[in-house]
Length: 300
Image (cartoon, rainbow, N blue to C red; front, top):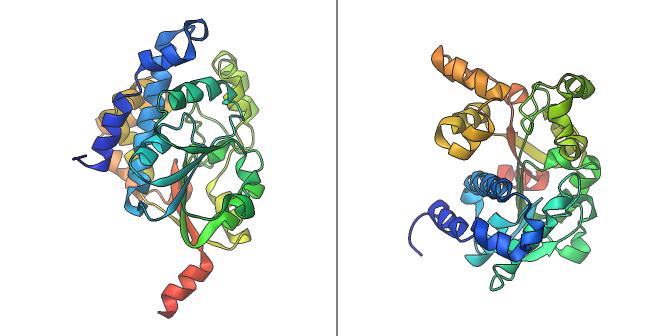
């Protein structure tokens, strides 16, 4: 197939139509087709973001693991293109209601032999599931309750020359992107008190949050012996999605981040976000690899 991998992904995503998914779900389970359409659009656009993040590392000769694959749209696409990818999706932590939608999408693509591990990240076992050369996640780590155990399992499942790439919020910045509201990491209950109705509408998701932050990630990486590096200017690029991504713009039309972005653009101060260090930026994108790999590179 011609075109870039992103273009191919967009073409593949068009085959996951709202009508086709609804047909596989059955009319009795689709209470609001508009909500289903919005959900599919959200996962399709977030899959595009994840693909852009991992594309430089992709190869058909390596084993790949998507942690928290959600509706499995990206994993399905990559498997359909011949990549050796496994999807890990426990269907828990506030997202269990997606299970039937994910199964409907998988059922609509019977020719794609995607392996889905319905386990938590901390239950990943290299003796059972093998080692992976590329492990990645997008907006997932903040929903893992046993984050320390998950880092141990993921590091043990990473091949000696492998790389992990993760994109997640940094709650040192007082903002919760899922609900689009300010939140203080050490006092999230205040946000729930002030915006009770809005939080209660997404209570399962809210209760799943672990409020991961920059320094916590650094400590966890050090504890499991992994080298870590952070991508710069991520916050600027994330905010610029408001102008480039219609679905993202819709989701942030009335959020705190959307209002701040429009104000900074109006004042011509948006590029000041480039000055923010990764510790003060959200989201954060970071790469993890074994320290032994780094030492070998330095010695060669």
